[in-house]
Amino acid sequence: MRKLEELLDPQESAWPLVQEWVEGCELPIQVLPPSAVCDSVLADLQVSTRSPLGAIAHGTGGILIDGGWLRMLGSGHPKLSRNLSNWNHQRANGFMLIADDVLGGFFAINGGGLGKDQGAIYYFAPDTLAWESLEVGHSEFTQWAFTVRLREFYRGFQWEGWQADVAALHGDSCFSLYPFLFTAQGSVQTSSRKPVSIAEQYAFHLAGGKP
Image (cartoon, rainbow, N blue to C red; front, top):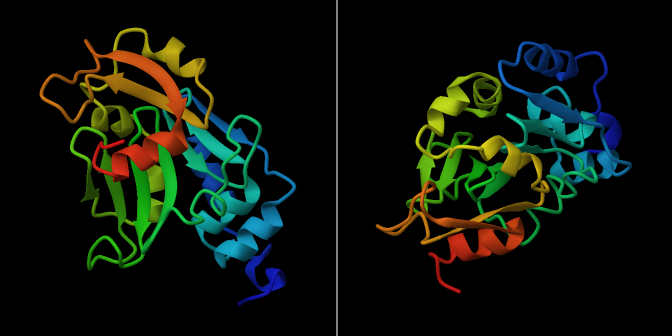
């Protein structure tokens, strides 16, 4: 276990690089300030601030992208109380959950539990209930999420008026759709939507859509 002093690197921190990406973001974005537990989150993750992941974990409370459609986890904030440490505790096995969306889709760094491409970002899709490799690493994923390519990724999954619905949704919640997206009848256009706990939805989706 490396000490906190070894993980904090002000001289070679990736934070200025992350800020540069944020400033060039092509979508509405909100960087939440870090919480009082940012040191312990970083120490628990054992990730250096020399990496964008460590810089986000320590330097932010999380990042809300495209009005909160995508939530990148940091050290926690009232708008997004989950942090990279507590959200992964007893929930991730062989991977690290780093972000999620309002449909109950989850992004994770493969630590060997999702495939042979260790370090690659995977997406757990709510319409297939399967992990899919995006074939990029964390830095590439972060840059990609700050561009209009994010909306291309979700093309067909955003309904008319979604911006207002998402703005009213807390960062620890997501929408549960019925009929479910993983069924033939499921559709973001015709299924009913209700806010549910993201933890509840994660358990439901990872269980294959079974209560």
